[in-house]
Image 1 (cartoon, rainbow over the protein chains, first blue to last red):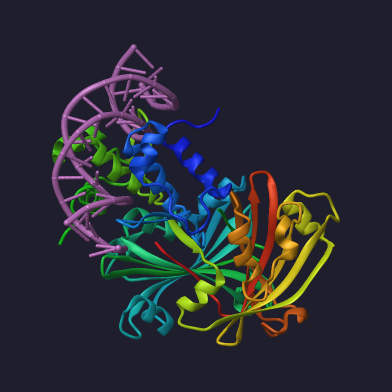
Image 2: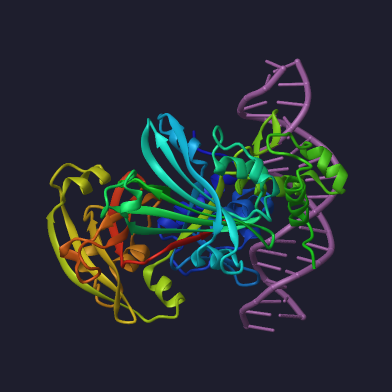
Length: 228
Length: 228
DNA sequence: GAGTGGTCTAGACCACGGG
DNA sequence: CCGTGGTCTAGACCACTCG
């Protein structure tokens, strides 16, 4: 029924925060005290409080102790799935079409984001991702050939460039930006010109080597959801 | 210099994944084996592998063991700060204006999201958040008076409704959706009609009681960023 | 300086779930 | 069934930081 172990401690502490036994900004008992109260080892209390701190409920500092966060900066974890998985998870059939694949000097927006010299020639791909044969998202991707030697030979009809790169060019870090844009005439396959569309721009790196810059434009009405 | 303890284990395992010593889909040694190899306790290995699983690098299942994730569903943690904190973190001056505050039957979009009967009367607030005196975001909020008794008496000129609720109406969970919309004539303070704007819609709950539904519309060009 | 969280250890039991 | 991860314990040392 109710959780046991460290999750029970977590739930009880959270209950007291909600019940304002421990109001925002106040200090809560230190780990050893709670361990004694609940009759568990300190490591168990530590696990519970660390979880609450990660979720944003507590501010913890050595010596200062644990305090109830004044501004519960809740952290939503949004997963970045491969589009195929995202679409099939919705119970729809996934497909994609590679529209173009050329080498061209990258525009400054891309070279700047990837910290490459202006006009660096990169692989440029455009593709359309389909859900139940309807346009789901448009992909505009630039790939650094220096970072991904095997890319020229990759067959991208079955697996999308995204999937191929995920498997063959591991990245260590990257960043991710969500913006709104007005659909252009060029992307009329996806949305009528003038419609508002959601774009996700992502750059990924392997250490200090830039791998790829990709912008996904989603069909109108698309939502990015997360739980709090 | 280099990390020690469980983070060192984490880094080493990640290195082997990147180096393709352990390719995607393959099983990695079980915890006890790694503990023996690195000369640490199993709990330390567990901590490292659990961290990698949370980050999406590993799939872990009892009995099946740990496998390198086929599709590194990277999880970006995006924090949901109070707008005041978000603006001041940018080095800009925050201010806000309460535009209206009435009780009115909520539209169906809101009552459905909050699982309330149609036309339930709720507090309705609209406000404008400013950064350096320029419009930053428009807020459209509905508050359930049954869940927040003290709200009617709250002074919302100094603290925004968001801040007041955060301090006085703790929530247990909620959800969060990002969409793109076309700016309407009604919100012309924020954006010229026809521009694409980013909206964030959030509902929060205290247990099974709905607290508030809020939609923030950000000025054109706004980005939501996260690190991978 | 000293209190508090961060982490590690060695050992143990348990729950899940693959075969 | 039984191997593997999930978790707990009791104790210890350490690092950070407040006062």
